[in-house]
Structure formats: structure tokens, C-alpha cells
Length: 216
Image (tube, rainbow, N blue to C red; front, side, top):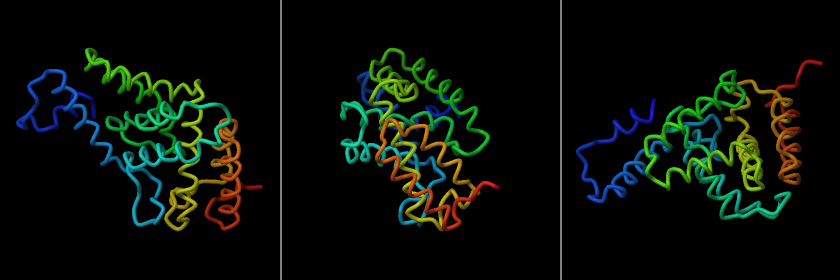
């Protein structure tokens, strides 16, 4: 779904503010509400259902606050929380892509195209430009804040899947221990202690037969 199609799906007959900028921001706010409908592969901790992207974004922001002492470098926590809140906004337009699926190879280009279209559609709004810049900071993983948020974004699904192994995306999709370990290894330098705990979790999941072992 394109940015234009998404905006068009919002009821145009609804009352809008008369201030032009406020009216446009109001429309964007409703547009972003669709993240509540994007269903991810990971279960919530209770296992009763899968989480939505909006729920994941909130949980990631909370994780930033909870694990901030474990960041490998000084991190501006307010900035990091902002990155966590906006990091999956492209999923409004392109949906969620399971990280262990072949489609993951095209995810970045699709999300970049969606964010560029969003920015172009609201080029007069500094707020949208700010969201775009924050999203790029997260994606580039160059700032300490971007690195920390990226690390927690990788580690949080590990903990959710482990919290309810019977309903895990690992078991449902036949994910291997090596696949998960490789993802953790890619962010370990940004949050070493939490990453090392995640490695322990993965090893236990392999021992229990939930994560597949690679053939010898």
C-alpha cells in the first residue's frame, strides 16, 4: 500500500482542524495508527497471540529505558527512545517482513522508498522530516543511539520467543540456532551483556529442540 493510498483510506468526511499544518499532522497521526494493525511473527510473552508493530515499538522504547545501563557507550536516552518509537514506521506502508525469510533481502529498499514518499508527501512539515531523519539514523546504525536501539531491536524478539517457546516464531518457521546466533553476533558490540544473555537463551532453546540444530 502506498502513502497516497493509505491517506486516501482515512475517512475524508471526518471533522478536521482548520489550521492547515495541524490538519496535516492530524491526518498523519491517524495514518500512523495503522501500525496497530500490522501483525508481526513474534508472540507476546503470554503466547495468546502475536504482537503488532505498534506494540513492538512501545516495548522497544521501554527496553531502551530498562537496559540503558548496559549500552556499550554513552547514549542520549531521550534520543534513543525517539528512535525506538519511529524505527518501524515504514511498516504502515510495506508491512512486516520476517527476518529469517527470503523477502528480507528487499526489505530495506522497500522501506526506504516508503519513507521517501512519506517525506515528499509532507515536505513542508519539519516534524515529518525529523521522523525521516530519526528513521535513517536508526537504519544507518552509526550513532551510539542507533546502535543501542538496533541491538535491542534484535534482542527483544529473542526474549519474547523464548518466553513462550510453544508459540514461538522459531518453531513455527523452523528457524535454526545458528540463524539466531548470527543476528545476535551482529549487534553484540553495542550491548554485550544483554547479548550474552540472549546467547544463553538461544542455547537453551536449541537444547529443548525448539530451535533446530544445523546438520553436522
